[in-house]
Length: 284
Ligand SMILES: C[C@](O)(CO)[C@H](O)COP(=O)(O)OP(=O)(O)OC[C@H]1O[C@@H](n2ccc(N)nc2=O)[C@H](O)[C@@H]1O
Ligand SMILES: Nc1ncnc2c1ncn2[C@@H]1O[C@H](COP(=O)(O)OP(=O)(O)OP(=O)(O)O)[C@@H](O)[C@H]1O
Image 1 (cartoon, helix red, strand yellow):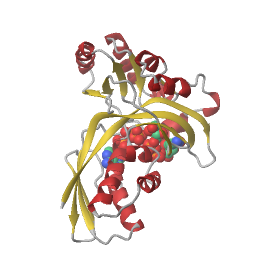
Image 2 (tube, rainbow, N blue to C red; image 1 turned 180 degrees about the vertical axis):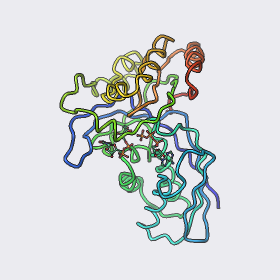
Image 3 (cartoon, helix red, strand yellow; image 1 turned 90 degrees about the horizontal axis):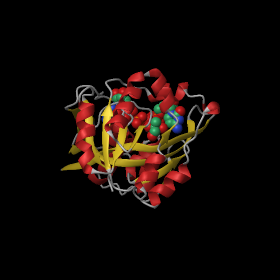
Image 4 (cartoon, rainbow, N blue to C red; image 1 turned 120 degrees about the vertical axis):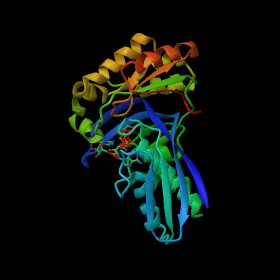
């Protein structure tokens, strides 16, 4: 039997850090939503007790370092599954981009293997398993739009944002999430975004208020390490995006645009100097 799972990319509409914790992670408060740019997983049962990962993307690990491999191993060990699986990853989400590509693949693998092997694991339990793989994985298990707290695993579902276009541009650099968190001085963040104001904007489907309340406290850190991210931000603003922010730890910058007529101007303007540019919709 062969099954398919879609693994969409996430963006952070708001990302605040409250403090550094004793376990080395940071206590966050952030608003995450999914966009219509997705990897596709093909999962096929194998009679042998083994996990095989393949992908057309030459630049991701295909061994136990792959998050989809780790998801399969975790579910096999925890539920004592003796069967094997072949997982092909059709990668479309840029890697190490701040779009949770690996986390979404891991979440899709958990959902897919639950189906493929008929394990009957609840969504809540899949999220708990996901948290063992990474802070963004629990959100990716269900997707939608949510306020994430704790280190990212405590989720409060909220309504979907007002529908709009999202232009994503990834400068040609790879950013390490742990380096960015490591360089953040959580006790001296100059300006915190307002999570309640962003939630209110989303609930009211107020596009302008959503753009006005975009904020990410990791932006200053990544911008100081990689000035090209600032350059992409400025370009997007100049080209007329209504709201512009870096996603996660970067380096991808997203622009929110309400009018379709503006999208091609922003997209084409960025394509001039950025190879990886996408114009997508928010996922409802
Ligand atoms: C930047 C975001 O992508 C925003 O959604 C997430 O906060 C990071 O999620 P992620 O990549 O799934 O993160 P993990 O794989 O769990 O952790 C990677 C590294 O980021 C740091 N990290 C991550 C999450 C968090 N709340 N505090 C942290 O300090 C830790 O140093 C950790 O070693
Ligand atoms: N299935 C996968 N797809 C992409 N990268 C993977 C995968 N499995 C492991 N990795 C590794 O994980 C690292 C981070 O990749 P990923 O694309 O998940 O980053 P990201 O978008 O910055 O994630 P986040 O937004 O959650 O911090 C890369 O160095 C990559 O080699």
